Structures are given as C-alpha cells and as structure tokens.
Length: 347
Ligand code: KG4
Ligand code: ZN
Image (cartoon, rainbow, N blue to C red):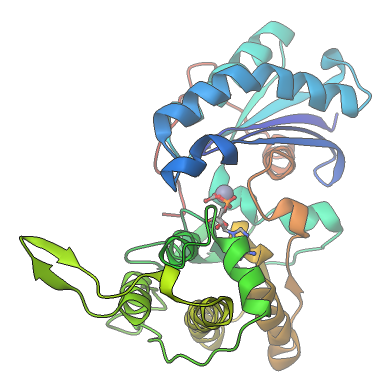
C-alpha cells in the first residue's frame, strides 16, 4: 500500500517519479525546459505550459518503466497542485486526475513548497518535529516553523525577489547566462568577495528577507551610476568591459551577500524558536556556500541539519510522491474536482 506516482509541473520542469513508502525512490524523471526559455532569460509561462503538455505523458511512462512497475501497481497518485504558474500546474493536475480516474486510485494534492522540505527524507534523513524549515528557490525564500511535515507557520519570507530569482538576475547583469544560480556558484569558486555589497534588512524583528536592493547594488557596482539620456537610462559601463577575474569577484561578492542575508534570517529564527532540527529545500540549496553555512549551524546549535542531496534540490516529482505518501497514510485524498492554485500554504 505504499507505491506512489508523483507528478510535478509547477514551473518549467516536467517531472514524474515512483516512490515506495515515502522515501525509497524507484524512479525520478525530470524533463527540464531550460533550452526553451534560454533566449528570454527567464521562464515564459505560455511556452512552459505548452511544453508540459507535450512532455507529461512520455515523462510519466518513463518513470513507470524505470521503476520496473506497472501503472496498475500504483496505490495512489500525488500531484503538486500549488503554488506555481497556473497554466503549468493545470497540465500536471489534469494528467493526475485522469490517471486517478482511469486506474480507480486515490488522488493526493501536494503543496510544492512544503514538498521541497520532504526532499531530505529521500536520502535517508530522519526529521524530528518541531523543525525549522528553510525553503530557498526560484520563487520562494521562506522560514517555516513545522509542527509536522504539513502543519506550518510562516515566520519569515522575502518581501520582494526570491533568492533564486536574485541569483538569476545577478547572472544576467554579469552576462553569465540563464539559469543563473549554478553559473554564479561556479564563477564564485574562482573569485574573491572583494566588493562590499549590502546585506539588506527589513523593518521590524521578523526574519524577513529582501534581495531587490542587493541586485540593484550589483547592477550599479558593475555598470556604474546610470544617467538619463533622451528619456532613457544609460549606464556608463557594461559587464562586457570586465575581465574573467573581475566577473568572478563580483559573482563571489554577490553570492556572499545573498548567503549572509539568508543566514542572518536563519540565525534569528533559531534564536527565537526551539526546534529539534533544521530542514531545508529548494533549488538554491544546490549552492555550495549556502550548504556549508547551513551545515555549520549543526555544531553551533547542537541540532541536526537536513539538506537534500543535489538531485532533489531543484524541482522534482520524488518529493511530491514522498510527501503525498505521508498525506495518504494520514487518510487525506481529494475528489476529482480539485484544481490548481497559484498560491500555496507557505506563502
Ligand atoms: O526549486 P527550483 O527548481 O524552482 C522553484 O521552485 O522556484 O529552484 C530554481 C532556482 C533558480 O533560480 C536557480 O538559479 C537556483 O534555483 N539555483 C541555484 C543553484 N542551482 C540552482 N542558486 C544558487 N546556487 C546554485 N548552485
Ligand atoms: Zn520548487
């Protein structure tokens, strides 16, 4: 009674996965759309939903095949139905509903952001509650107090850009390409944090984040202060004027500023709340500096820190099937009238 098919299509990854008993990944197939959005420097919602339509069935078939099971062996179907791009989400939700109806199996709706915090379980973590959950992705930067895997309170979040979005914009300013996070990370390993960039703080005592000003500070640092010429803003320099070492130094300085901001929020949250462990998830958890800093918390606060392995940082369906199993075991499933929502429970 523990074989779940997970389906994920909230942004620009079409993914399906078969997971046994919530943690044992039998297959995890992710079809990335990076090449389709590359020339636009960001995800184009209409292109994403059309690509999901083309890919969803082959991806599900591949996940079933790689798991060496039959569709009929699946006990329940879990789908990420929120938050995300509505057109993209609807493709996965419709596929999941159709399969659930066709096979006569329960349908389980999973919140994508909360599922990111299940990802460490896929590599053998044993999460104890209450836990501090840290979600850092392309769409979210949130601190969550978790009573159990799905009961949570948001205690801090970004008031403007998400950290992943800030990495992507920084890579664009430095002309490193898209998606930017991995490129900034790689450039940083060859650079030094020689530039002083702000660690923006929000008003009040809540551990909220803000990355928009930091991005502007990088823009002005790299390209100089803009002047208005004939009604439009013109920058005196371009990233093309910089040599490789200068680009790497800016990337490294930016990465340090983002990671310091995240860590300030995390330390604030840990100082004001008693938790059994820290659990983190989301695409930005692939970042080497963030991982090192989060791992260091363990000895400082004497609590375990559970990070996802790199395969399960970015969007995937194994985390959906995993959290889906937890909900399934708690008797939660949906009628075929469920739909998708751009907003989730953690935002
Ligand atoms: O979780 P995810 O796949 O999608 C959302 O749910 O938003 O996260 C994607 C984000 C992108 O913004 C990407 O640039 C960022 O994760 N990312 C990284 C790294 N790898 C991916 N950011 C910083 N360092 C990395 N190594
Ligand atoms: Zn995500």
